[in-house]
Image (cartoon, rainbow over all chains, first blue to last red; front, side):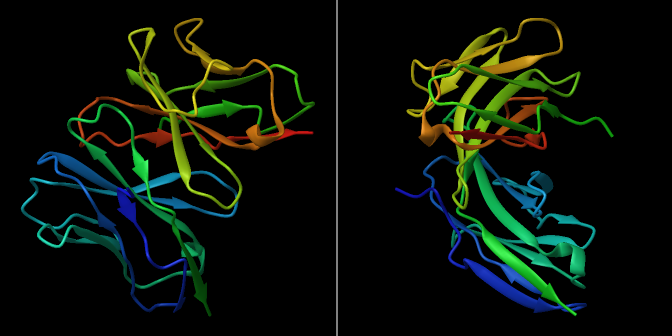
Length: 115
Length: 115
């Protein structure tokens, strides 16, 4: 079964607008961490933001914020004031407390920022 | 900012040949990982390594794969007899802790092409 689901294969947003990238997850472990990574066309994986299952507040990191809805098991990434350089693949990923070390990735969402 | 470095950035090899992919994790990190990403697909966990031994491995990590930390800084992935389906981007990653809130920091990847 899929642990991480990203239902949007591709998204478009205009420069300076905000965009939300969806992520839902599946776990029975009470302790888990959710991560978002950016992969530009050059291929590297860049860590963006983290949300812990016990965190009371939504994580924020500059223009990135996480809309964490624990009951719905969703952890959507919000990018505010989009820039052309935000065009990339975005991956949601999860680490579970009991599963060991592995980071499980979703299939990703391709974001294109247009002028 | 410290980073994970991988060499080479691109490796072309013939089917049946052995390849060694090299990584230098972030210096104070204790946990090391290899992931792969077949073109256009999701990022898949291969193996994690801690205290000079494999901590966890996926079904993909069969007998043709091995990992080693030959000295205090390098972390290598060896594929003994490459197959066409081994063509992928291979990412090395490291983390400071095993805990769920410890992000993995990825290198820029090695693109392996098996012909």
